[in-house]
Image 1 (cartoon, protein in one colour):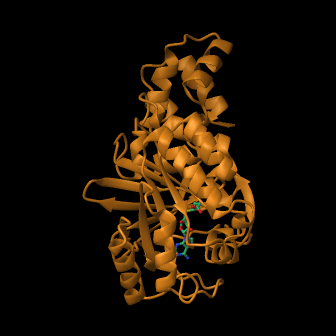
Image 2: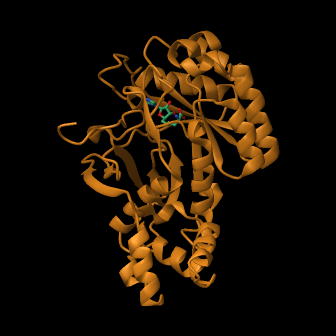
Length: 344
Ligand code: SAH
């Protein structure tokens, strides 16, 4: 059984021509699928084609397994079941301007950052483009079938998007397709731990999406201790790559900086970060580390984060403290993980 969401318009055109159907059906099918409609409900298709589609495809292979709603801020964590029994997680955050979904790009992750729950089991497998689209559509339908409730997408759940590059690019194209959800690239953010060759490639292949870098340290000594990827790509490589990304796309770069007690939160770190980012068109999101019990690292606490922010601002670096959402349901940054179905 194929996942219908893995098909883009060209895949549909090819499939239809292979089975002797007309090309214009491709847009009809694509449009219906993104409205969350089943093959049986695709009323403008001939019965024979509906039957053929039902025999070959499942409309969305990603099913909502559980939904948890934060009592603190209404953030929803979705636990999704995949066709092969794996479980992934996504998060829906509602703001005044719209609904943002944070999706996973891999089952597990092999980056093994010292503070993050997603890499605890290592990488299990990549998600396909259709599975990523399935996360978005399952939630869209949960908010109201046929609706276009989701306005923003962030690739910040489990997994490293650049470790699954081809599927992620296909997914991004699917999301911005005008026949589907038609989400503007500006409303999509991709977050990476800093796989630099893919930053250049994204700028050349697609551009337009907001690039977020998980930096978390102002120098290589600290960064290499908490993020193994830094042994391959150094901070200077990241700075070169994001300059290229900005020149090519005109999109300001976002840096994520999670404050870890005694590791990266001193005023010296703040000053060093200012020198590093001086003159770069960027914004820094400071967040207090979210608790992950297996990792044993502590968050800095309110005051050190405020202090850090002050230093950045005084030195002309654009920065804000990001509100932690969904921490009571383990739905905050770095708390998403691969759960397994019972008895596994
Ligand atoms: N692999 C990508 C996508 C994951 S995004 C990346 O590294 O960017 C998840 C974000 O949450 C990243 O910025 C990550 O560094 C951050 N994060 C991970 N664990 C965290 C924790 N315990 N507290 C706060 N942020 C965390």
